[in-house]
View 1 (cartoon, rainbow, N blue to C red):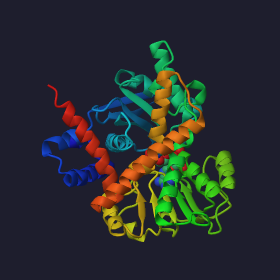
View 2 (view 1 turned 60 degrees about the horizontal axis):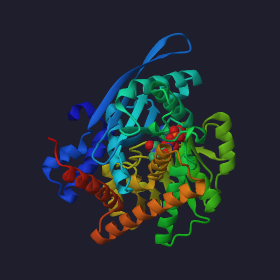
View 3 (view 1 turned 180 degrees about the vertical axis):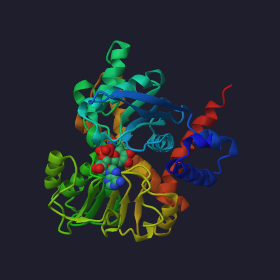
Length: 421
Ligand code: NAD
């Protein structure tokens, strides 16, 4: 069983799970049931390319557990995506949904592709064919898709349209993160970044740290990183002094003009060539001294090589799995220097608003943006309070507290439902 998921990200998710399982003293007979995905699907996705050739892409969907409702999770389009990586992300989704009190098991999907090298037409054919291959395994009451790295509202629309065409009627509940014009919700696009900023504000309040005039560093300038940058700069008066994306890293100690960055990315599609800051080696970004550090790109970037060199007051993990278990050991020792907002808490805004979107889609009854944001912040406030309380009471790091709350809820659900037959 382990072999099919063999991947460093899956190993990382398992190591993290074992740590929590030991902490919660979860009996051995429950551990494998909790850790291994319930269902995994691998599909070949043939696509007609613009040059007339046919290319077959490898796609995956993993549904981690089915004990608390349908499964829910995004779809990642990125080079080198593996079944193990998708399985790890699905496991983290399970703990995240449980921590936020959402009636879902975790899921995740992915296609091994490089979205930057695909034309719009190729992207549409790839998205539609992937959804077509997934139709037997998903549904608005069994497994709901959403966006993740490399996917966006347009792709969610193609997913929805393909599924709906197959059913013969519109099924908006099959996917979240779709445009408002086809039953999406206000606030979904901004939800993960805004949730991250809300939690940074709460952490700063706890630490009596003044954000205004403080410094922030952000890795990844996509949906989440860009929204977080705007929230920190425009709402909180912070200086974002360093940013990066797949094309490079940039630093300006006077504070980067975020509006200029947005204009540049809008025009050129990436940070490459941005003239409002100095290029720096990408591996220097995360160790740039700052008040708030936000990894908002890929997993495993804070590891044993740089954990001791991180110099921030708040580490807000907007990405999934940015910190390895090795790095965590270092951060645990530095708990009074660095306030960690662990990923399953920090980036939960996305799935919380996805849940709101799903509820609205099922009921065909829509909320305005204020209602969405108010409810989002209420849920985050509750999870933040629960994590801080548990960490204080049991004298444990925030990550252990967050995972313990999430895993415990899934354990409870599995126990009361029992083992069938
Ligand atoms: P995105 O595709 O919109 O943006 C990703 C950004 O990261 C891009 O700027 C890309 O260039 C950059 N990037 C990729 N590899 C990089 C690398 N090695 N170094 C530096 N930058 C790199 O994706 P997103 O939706 O913003 O997601 C970012 C992270 O947040 C992912 O880990 C994702 O799983 C997580 N997340 C996203 C959501 C959501 O709602 N979108 C929700 C929860 C968690």
